[in-house]
Image (cartoon, rainbow, N blue to C red; front, top):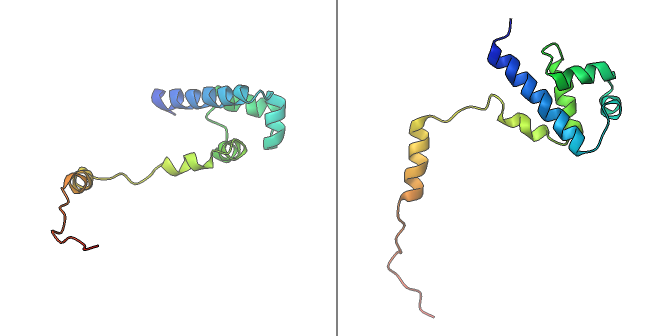
Length: 103
């Protein structure tokens, strides 16, 4: 059984898919055909049905030229210490070497 948060996340994902499809002025039938699925299956995706295979979501991302979006999923998170070290390195002041070049 899925949590309420998971169900809401899937519904939001489906709504975003629908919005992108409409922005591209494509019908459900055309998009479904491009994915190789039936219109009812595609309609289930737009509704956020949890039974839709993840492979279909990946195919939809490919059609939308958005496969790069997958790279952020389950990406290893940086520890607070690593983040602090990066900020500290950026803030460290760099000084000139003191030697001037003669022209």
